[in-house]
Image (cartoon, rainbow, N blue to C red; front, side, top):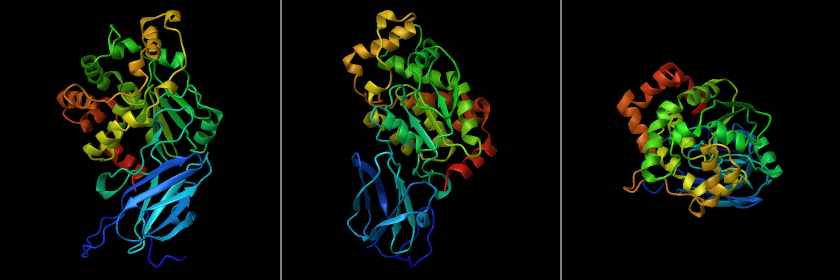
Length: 352
């Protein structure tokens, strides 16, 4: 099939006089079987669907898998280890929406997901396939490693404490690995216990405690040619805070940032975030604390990231930034070394 109109590589919001037609929206890709995905969207116009094996392939580098589709859904068989990207081409004006699976379907991974597709500054969107966030990766299978290898990652920034990294080393190889040591007690406090009030204090500590890790992370993101994954153990708290700053720098709306943050409750699989260990064999309070997770049935499943009043814990970290630095932009400049010029460069690299 030949497209009748010029194609664009990002979604443009146009003023359309006809109320009977609306642009492709709510696009989503979900794994429905090990070797099958479903692509769904809303919108009343017909759509041509292309599939590619690279995030930057574009429509011309993709394969047409559905022509003039008006159903708003397509299912297609895929290579189980592949990372497919899809282009929804609006048949009315040729506008293109790129979409991929938000979470990687790993056998023994947790919360490993792509930051692509979110609306950002200047009416643009975050590029797919360039930044990934994750939980711990100490028990990945060979199939998981094969799937991750297809991402062509160049760098991994580990936000975990020294104790966590010793107890459960990452299995991801062939990347430049960066980590900066600190004790878990600095993050959680000497009592090393989790409750709602303590977790709020933990988030309040993050802007100061994690500043060295954030400097390393943003430095990697700024380098040319990098594809970066960053992680903590659950991929939700420290990783959620880091993600909030990255997306803020890219001009992603705050409500979208919080929606991404809460996806951890859906995509975490705690049983794969660390290795099996015996608390009685651990030598430090922090190690005993980490090991004790596996004995607590309440922690065997993801918990909602909100306090008793229904406020997201991430609000505490952002409130700390507002109170001490005035804004995320000032915090990034003073504590992370990312000034306005750096933000412009990040947006040029990660937005389209």
